[in-house]
Image (tube, rainbow, N blue to C red; front, side, top):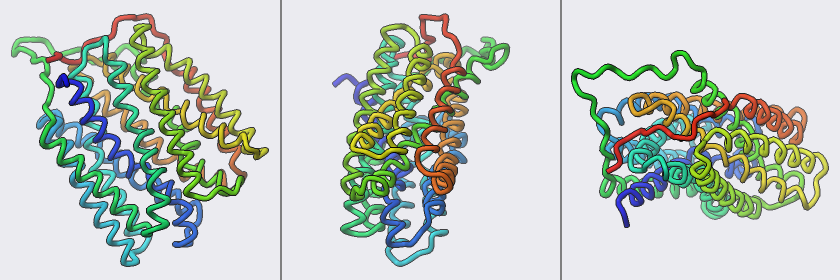
Length: 398
């Protein structure tokens, strides 16, 4: 196997492991509601805890990756997340309170931020512009794959072993992947600037392009997390599904989302643009999520299919926005620009679950989905026009 594909596999595995616990709490929602007697807004706050911790630590981990390299940062952070999840499993198993669990999940999210800051840089550094859309599309499948792993494993593990058993499984996965990264990952070669060279121009000055990409990427998180975080409970409440059965269906939906991300990345390589496909997929997202809102208002067997398609299509643009950010920023600014982009997306991801939960509790599921579709329309309008067909290099490919 060529080394760049091994690095892609390691980066994707690390991101998948991190996403499984950062975004895995929604798939314990039914169990937490029934066994811990938590309200939906309380569960929404727990869902937000890992993402809140992640957002707080992204910039720090990004600076560490700049100084020490991707391998050390990913292995250290993911290993720390494994340890914290193990402690969380013990706390739940001994009857620890909701506040303690939330704090541990936030700390684990902060440790897992290392993967978000460094794994994308690892992949981007090993691939040339002509393959980068596909490579980042594959790497970005980690989010739906991580959610799929969580959806497939959390409900049955919680049913068989309790919530502490589910967290113990996540701790083990993170620990194993951290060891693999420490043993086999190799940092890419970065272009070096001579001592007399002028510093690279700030890509944020004189142009709103990067800020518009950041804004559109953050807005597109709203439909993704509205559909993904509450689809399981929606199916349980409106269609009478079991948590395990709903979890299996959502796992299938996350696989569909992974396929959408790969296809979108390949499409962007072929047309020489990240932004035109991103805009068109944002419009498609709005249409599909509106359809899901209609089926939530009038539940039928079509409801499940609409939710599956919604979870799939809302995942499609993420890799495009990350790749566009790095290419527009250039090699000297890509790390900082990706940090800003990651922070915006994950800050949005942290606030969407509790806000959506409050809206659902007050008005029902369909208004929350309709609002998410409206946000997707705004994102499509915010994506900047793309007149360039030649992506910018972000590294020296070995």
